[in-house]
Image 1: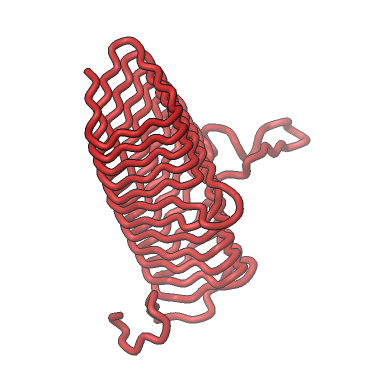
Image 2: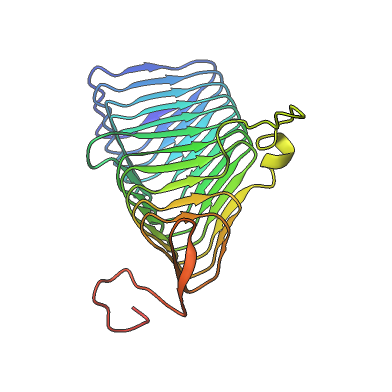
Length: 287
């Protein structure tokens, strides 16, 4: 089955369909030098007003992509592996994005999610085998950065999440990062749920930091309405309570209570019983 809606413009795009692939593309489609490869039963459904300018989408064994209305994919390279699923709701923008999805990975974006490189650099997302990524509606990754989700790992982000440029999010194999609703992170943020390299005890020769059993107990849990300052670094075994603020250039590893300000290296609570607002100069605590 191949259905292509009105307003189609391919312009030097190469499309390869193979082995029963179903392609359904909505209205106002525009590819512009886009190469799309579908193989071995993959399905592609794209909603209205979609633009894929310079993008190269490779859908492999058993893959499925569903993109609804108003999505913009510009200068992106998306490589989706075997048994993968990618669902993007309406209002999304993926600009200068290079994403790789591996076998049986699952990525779900909510409504009005934006992943955009406004300035220098590009956006690189790598989702490993059996990994899970869920991003709630209204999220905005507003600059260049990297997001890596390892095999069997999970990244779950609530609605209204925002983060600035040069973010580095690393969810190690078998670990997880969970972020609540309405969280606001500044530029140059690092979140890491593992050490990325192995460490051994020289006497026993045992791996002491990155075995499967060790990794599965590592996580970062961030509550609702948390504000992370510029250059803050958040490591595994961290819990940050609702409504708290992490000061600029802080290193966080441990438990931060709700409604407090924590800062320093390592981060320590410097003020309790606070609330914050996205609006500068707000006069009401409810704003």
